[in-house]
Image (cartoon, rainbow over all chains, first blue to last red; front, top):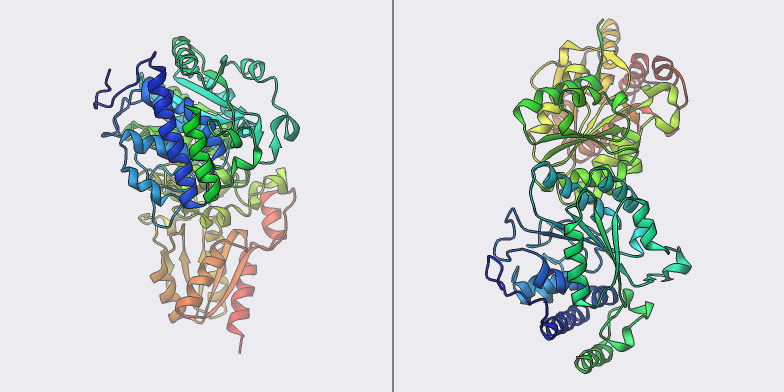
Length: 284
Length: 311
């Protein structure tokens, strides 16, 4: 199976293919953040599986033609997780893999948070939380006005949805019946200062989104089949936006980083980096 | 003297533009009756989107629409556009240089009865501090109309500032409008008076008062606060003894400081600023507040005399 630009897709039932790709991406995340000595590794590792499912199976996109009008759009509303987004975009061929070594360096197109004008494949400039979902629903409204058929996949952090603007966007998407929006909440229960339920409780998430008029599914965010099937169901919903609450593990794939809040924004030192690569190796 | 609303100039221009700019859409945040965008909605309901009381979401949504090739004009009161939604204006619009126009009405102290909470005296300062942002402050209905037309044809973010009240129509400024250009309204050799926005009328009155005293005042009008017409300004700094700026805005961060910074760097001369001092306003009629907060021709004359009597 190929996209129009010839990028290899991973078949729905090719579990080994997804795992192999995710391992490559996770290695890249660790290397980028280690080299830059700066960046967000925990959330990036946790969001790797949803991004792999989207970019290598679900979405129709052309890395050699980033402005192709009918492409599906992915918006990283949790903008700090650029390591996973840039790793995926480079691996897909949007820009050279070698660019990843310039992450967070002066002159690089790979800013700490996504900057659409500079980076091929980045659809929206995000960073301060809540902006991405609003921008995404604005883009989706534009596609509705023009009767275009592509979809907008918007990944929000769970901490992020404490922002009031997220709920403004939620109301807006409901009002304008934006059924071309498929949101994903990366539900890992951890934010910068600790457990989300202690910092600012979010549960129960599913009825919250339902009460805002969204079609909501809750899945295991590391189960590729579950992600793909949830997207298929979301795309079949008409007249309302969809939200997928994806339960994930922050730091997924590197045992000593899993569910440890320290790894939200701390780069690994040399020892930790080597240990992390080894942990990935053992995990597959 | 004829009085007309600057916000009406904005919406009349939008209706005009709708024919020639099929990608133009108008957003509002539950103040369409006040911003007058309901007149656009009546004519083009499919191109009007009411975002409810969501200024933050509205500005990011506008950014998203612009990224899909639309030309959104997001409309609300200045205080909400700049203070409530400063992050969205900065990070969704200015930083990625997205083609969004922000139509801000009810700016300045002449917003009147609603009181200080709604009187945006800081919006020029906030908007002009963001890189990539163009800031236009028209002086009357016709200039508001022209500024809106110019903004539509100018790629990138533009902040357009309008008031709530009816303001004097000033035929002297009905010359071709160009972003980044100031207007030489009256020639003069001893002192320069510079207005932005609705203060042009008070500045012209001040010029007359000075003339009666035998003082020749040059009058410049800068509807484009950013970019500023530096050549016109520097010439005035060189050719006259000093500059008085007049704006219906805080003296902090607005036209006055922009002028002072440019003059200080290029041709230092005395610059004195007429505007709202570092205070919040209060409820009252527009005219009463202009009197009380020192935004009248005699206030401008006083500042001019201070410069002219400096040793």
